[in-house]
Image (cartoon, rainbow, N blue to C red; front, top):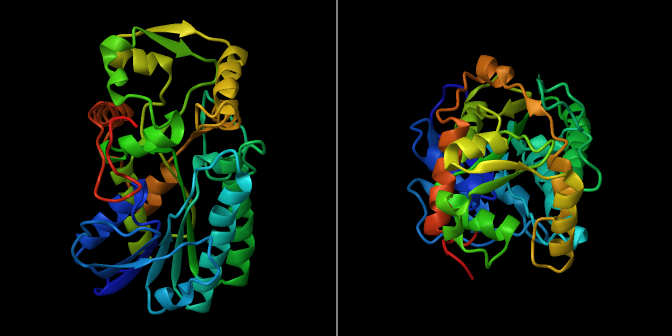
Length: 343
C-alpha cells in the first residue's frame, strides 16, 4: 500500500491464532479500506470493515483467483497441524493449498504476497547464539510441519524468480501464543482431555529440563504487527525473523512458576512422548519434539531495522498470559479458537 488509503487485503486462515490478530489489526488501520478473510468456517462475530468467504484450500474447486482480484496484498496464514498420524492430509492443505494460493496471487496480479513461514523451516542450528535469515531452511525432515515449511521455502525461491514484479515476504516467527489461543493449542499439542487448570504453578513443583529444549516465543499480536508493517512497507521483501527475548528453557519456566528444574535425558522424554503419540493419547508427534530440540535461536535485527518492528511483550509476559488463558479455558469467537477447559 505504501502510504495510500483504501487498500484491500486478503487474509487466508483468518480465523486461527495468527489470523484473528492480523484481521483485527488490519481492520483498525485507517489506511486499510477493507479486509477479506478466507477460512473454512466463518467467525461468529466478525470485526468491522471485514468481509468473509468460506474456502477450503484442500479443495481444487474453490476459486481463489476471484477472491484475490483487486487485492493490494495477500497474507497467507492458513495451516493445518493435524492429523499428525496422516501427513498426506496435512500436505494437501499446507503444501498443495499453498501452491494454489501462490498461483492464484500471480494470476490475479496481486502486488504483494506475505507468507507465514516459521522458525520450523530452519535447519538444525545453535542454541548459544542467534542466527540471521541466511541460515539454511531445510527443516528437520522427520517432522511433517518442518518438512512442509521448508518445502514451501524452496517453492518461493522459484516463485520470486518467476514473478519479479511481485513483492514476496516470508515471515519466520518463533512459537506464537496469546490468551485466546490457549484452548486451541492445548487441543493441538496436548490433547482434548488435558485439563487446563493443571497449569497452576502450585501443581508444577518439578519441571523437566531436557538438553536442547531452549526455544523462542512471541505474542501473536506482536507477530500480527509485523505482518501489518510488511504489507505497508513497499520496500520489504524476503525473510524476516520474529521473536522476543529472552529464550525460554526450564530455568525460565522455573523462575515463573517457582518449580524446580530436574534433568531429564532426551531419550527418556522422547520415549514417553513416542509411546503416548503411538497410542493416540498425545497429538504432538515425537518427530516435532526432535525438531524443537534442534531449532536455532533467531536474530531479529532485520525486522527491527527494515520494518521498524519491536515486540511489546517479553517472553515471560507472553507465557504468563498464555498459561492464564490455559487455566481459564480461554478462546475466541471462531471455531478453531473456541474456548473449553477440557473435553
